[in-house]
Image (cartoon, rainbow, N blue to C red; front, side, top):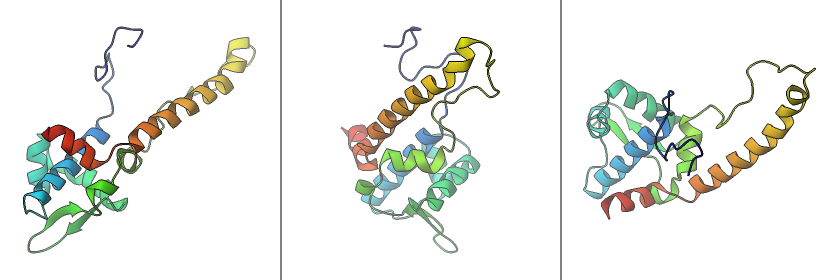
Length: 154
């Protein structure tokens, strides 16, 4: 439970980063298509499942391709397929491929070092943020694309 009363998946004022969600959706759809005998899907086919613009999907698939999680085929039969088995792609792999920003960030400018809080807040929050990020990464590392798809299909 979140102290503000905001539940998991809800946002207040600022939209959450959905890049990982879009990428995980695309990978799960590519795996389901593979299971159904379709090794390659176009960005338009993936975009139809995500219900977004194909340009957004191509950007996401490009990030996933650079990380080796998908491969792109050009020419006749063009499209995207998984770059390795879905059982070997963790959500941590996905997060690292598409989310370049840190999970939590410190002040954008130096706080007032004459203030006792301003002087000491950065090291304290750095330790806390590092611990939270480690826990977040460990949770994502436990889930594969196969796990996500199996839960969807259950």
